[in-house]
Structures are given as C-alpha cells and as structure tokens.
Length: 131
Image (cartoon, rainbow, N blue to C red):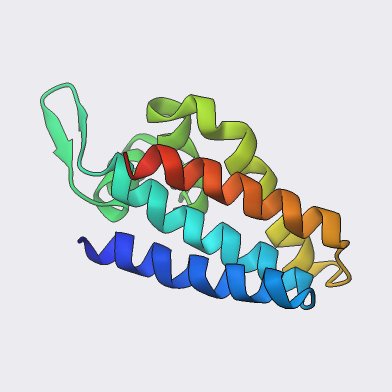
C-alpha cells in the first residue's frame, strides 16, 4: 500500500470517528478534505502529459509554475490536475475544499448535515481512487 493511500485511510478513520461521535463537525469536514487529497494524489500520480511523466504533485506543480507568470499553490496545482484527469470528481472535491476552507478560517460552527455530505463526498472519491 502506498504512503499516500495509508495517509488517506488514516485521515478517513479520524473523519469517521468524529462523525460517529456527532461533534466537531468542522473537523469531520477538514479530515474528509485532507483524506480526499491523499486519495486523489494516489490515483492521479504518476501523471503522463505528452512525453513527460510527473510522479508527484510537486513535479506537476513545478511544470505548471514554469508555464505561468505567477506562483501556483499546491491546492491550485491539485485542482488543475483534477480538472485534467478526474474532472467528474470536481463537484465532490470542490465541495470538500470550499467547506474545509470555511470551517478552518471563517466559521467552525458547521451543521451536522454538512459534515454528513462531506463524508459522503469523501467515500465517493475514495471508491473511485482505490478501484
């Protein structure tokens, strides 16, 4: 099992535990988002574009940065990779990213239903990325 997959499953376990305890909904969302990151990286990389192979997000990000006038964050590079390789997961990933950002920086008071949706989106991402 890859390190990315182990990390994803570790974060997913924490997400599931918090969800079952019905508290810390902000952390359910945050752990769902970070788990999804590792599942997606596990699935996408290595990524082949033309004759080039990008083994990691950092490799891909370096390539993207070399074609852009401004620096690209890891999150933006991953989003770009998702758009290129796993576009059908954009809604689930986008939801997790947006809700996690909100829970971490804007409002940690998250509704239980939002945490449930985040968990379902994580499961959708995991199911695809691990098959």
